[in-house]
Length: 318
Image (cartoon, rainbow, N blue to C red):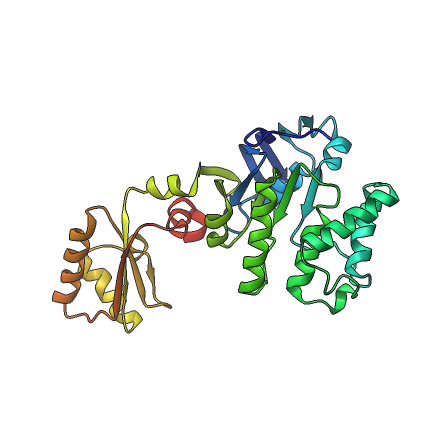
């Protein structure tokens, strides 16, 4: 199998578009994912992330645009593309009646890996991903974290050049999530091109070398996590109140609108964009205090990926 030097484009999407009837699910999306890197596709529900993944993994035909994986054109060489990719979708693909070891062997047979080579690869994956304690248990008796790990590991059976992970840590407990993060980062460090979709922005912030945020089927902003945060050109003041009513009073006292200030009545929190540094934050806090509104707590901080997401996605704030 061809290998790619770290930093070389493995996945190339150029103007991808997909419609379902009158609905444009994906519109003119372009990006590259490189060997040895994690590329994150972010966006609200319905933004087109999974549709994009399904096109790139040959599960859906491309309506417009073109794409290639490891140099193979998806429209002309779909069989060749399938031989060099791995996919762990939102729904688990493993058989709960088989053991973890039997599942891995089954995936190896589907990829037509010779028996002797397949056996060695299965043992390599079980040892490398610390699955020995449950390798010979039926999957139905395993924990959610163990099943999800097996699903990701099964997608690696053929040593793919490109790995697609569609919300791989959904439903996992914090410890299992962190363990899977380490494994995904390790795969990229060893040269795999990883495309990741996730609703956990902390996950993207920690793992992704490059990020594309989608909304309503379109690519709205791209860059590294640091670039996207820096591009906001502002810091953030978070102010906590004792009630939603006091939060509303604070918004009026500041002379703005709830959407502008990121009002969250359920959390009794006001998130205020600040462009004038800490001095501006102090002025805002004094204005709230002078209005007789008690403040429970406050924090002045740099923007997070959550702030970037909320700034650029209409669907998330509409």
